[in-house]
Image 1 (cartoon, rainbow, N blue to C red):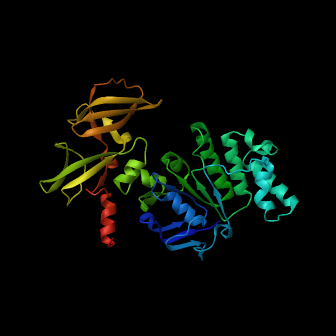
Image 2: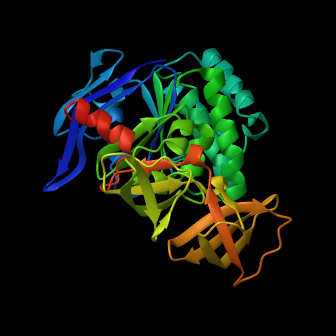
Image 3: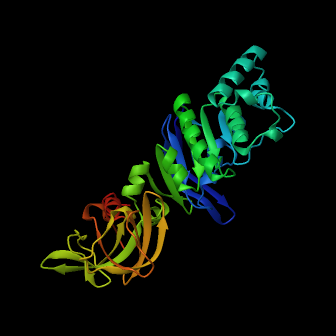
Length: 362
């Protein structure tokens, strides 16, 4: 196991900043996910940790040792790519054994460790199979076995499930997390898929334009997003976001959405405008509410359904019981759970987080 720390890491490609002054600590033994859209800098960050890219500025530490200029082969880190990178002319056993044999590990030890990791990943029945005859899921297990058999200080994984179909991805999420828990090694995992991240991670860092939007547990990111970017990126469906006007009425701030006062909601003080965020599961149907919208879509999801409303407030999504019969064009009143509302400033930062940054001088 190992702690990974980045201090002021920047990576420029000509005039483009792929990573911008990144400070990040990845705790020893954690399953840590770098999450964000294409081009946000997550893969470049991973390659810098691996030693496959050199930072333009800043330093990289492994367990307190400065490895910034140490080449990849000297860092004792295993890298698992999206494409399997297996040797097609070798069978499964020899693919897994390759990193040990290249280091001169004795033959008996090689056999023992290969069989041990094959059992761990449930591919012992495939050891004598040719790579070309394996399914995508089995090939990814072989790639993982080849990484695990080395017993490296950390595992770095770059979208390793990206080429698999939905059923295999779900299964491999369970297997990867289970493998991590059995081995206990630090794992850094890159993905653009927030569902993968939420299923597996201890900690997630959401990146945007080469910088950190938020670092926290899956629960923190979901319930207390630090910005509207995180609110939109985490959750399926995403958090509803509505610009509101904040007015003082009897020395009490009151939020108005599309001209309607939001009774029962504690509006933020000392601002004239704010953005209200609410998750679909915290919106309820309330026929007595003055805030009404028209049903424009219903997505049936088995136990629940996602209903899309359009109204003066814009577009809103809510989760409803599957027993509720709704049709296109139905008009519904809605209300929000006050305890679940998150407020953002006009610039898109969560108001509590924004004030904390101001107090810290950020």
